[in-house]
Amino acid sequence: MKPLIIASKKDPAGVNIIENLKKLNCKIPIHLVDTDIVHAENIDKTLKNELKLDFDFIIFASKHQSVKKVRSLSVHPIGNWKKADFGGKDSTICPSNALVLKHFFQTLEKAMKNEDLDYQLTMESTHHGPYIETPCLFIEIGSTSEEWNDKKTGELIAKIIIDSINTIKNKDNKNLKIAFGIGGPHYCPNFNPIQLNNNFAISHVIAEYALPLTEKQVSEAINKTLPKPHYVLVDWKGLGNATQRNNALDILKKFNLEIVKTSEGK
Image (cartoon, rainbow, N blue to C red; front, side, top):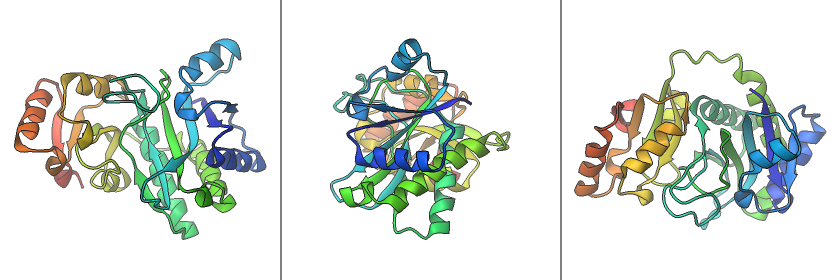
């Protein structure tokens, strides 16, 4: 794996993380963009074609904002299941490596326990831009300027990035089941424990607010998941009303996937 780390000069959390990466003498290439990170469309093509950078995975270091201002550390894939309100393309998602996403999430949990930090750990469902064609993930500090600028937190995320990249090549992933998720709230309460503790590796998540499910969404999830998924994890109570649940099952049965409820996968 040849990773690249990208952050925005406008993003205090991203700058915080990058500064700490440099202090730690990070050997992973780093690139700062002038625009908001969610609008850095096709940044992978630009960097490969114009700067001749060689990479096959992108880690976006970023801030996270929420209405409730919860202190959080999160990891998530990107793209849009419907309209692209915050960068990217309508109804188009970006490649997500389920094994890498799981490893980052588990590494983050371990580090948080060791440091005894007062943060909420969470995945997020697939959302926002930028649109790129290179496998990627976002790792974020939330949710106010106090957390974005906290040097200890920036150092923690920097260490997690370095540690995750250095150790993933030694992971034994033979028994992991590759899956994507459907249903439930944005912060994935029924997918988080599976990603942390189970033998499922989750790539993308289609939250309940992106339903009713469409064949296009399922095709996107399958085609933009690495390695190829053979499972779909379903948050049954988070699929909406009975009509939406039945619609989702009818669509999923058209694809060669094993359907597993989150209640069974924990």
